[in-house]
Length: 317
Image 1 (cartoon, one colour):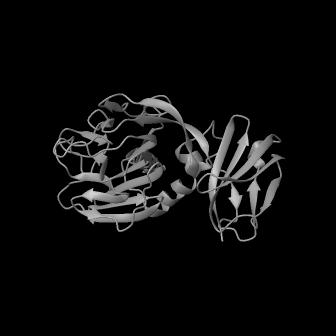
Image 2: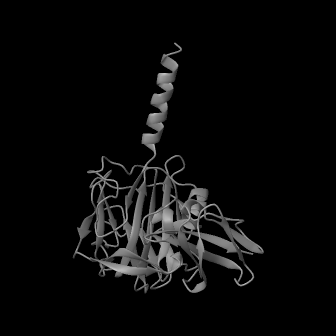
Image 3: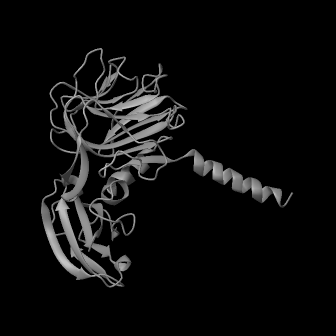
């Protein structure tokens, strides 16, 4: 029995780790899943282009994105993925729309057979025909961190932008479930009321087979530059390390991971405007920066070391 229990324990750990996972598409000149764990995305309509774009919310970093024309997009084949997306899931996107007049399709679960689904409506979050947000958090021409979660235990669907829950509803009739066709479409409108779509670009897509809670979504948003997108080069660690956060008088940047290398520190505001820049030496030392020069609110720190960089958001009180 003493030998059986450890074996059973290991099996349970393996099953648990296998049960919760993520598929990651970063559009780095490819529609393939980054780790080869899922099927490549399929082009819907006309093929788009991979272009370099500036992501202002990540300190003005440049990244390859997939740019699509109006009423064109990409499709995830859930059948080919072994029905990876079930009744509990998370869809995590970072995208931009060029036009927000009226309805603009974001996600379609029913393979173009119904008008129901996720839209941006004049900048507001909408799941037709159930709920619309009171405010309009999506701005034309600006990238949005957009997350949809569905929890099978409650059938609750919640839609977030920039890590804030904006709308939610109880999905009593499965309107946010993939139908028998097994396809999940992005940015490509249905055939019932067609062409409710915008041109735009997508920088990343992550699909989880479980619902992320609000704390996990906030963490992903705060470390968006490195943990979600890997912007601008190879990651050294999962994020730039600094403390305290939020900060009142100063921040201390941890440079111990950079092993006596020359590094650049760049701080930008939430819109990507550069506010501070300095060169220093990494290694066993930390670097202290006064926050007196920064307005209260969100700022982005980037640490650049050769071809490598990491970033983190921080709050100044």
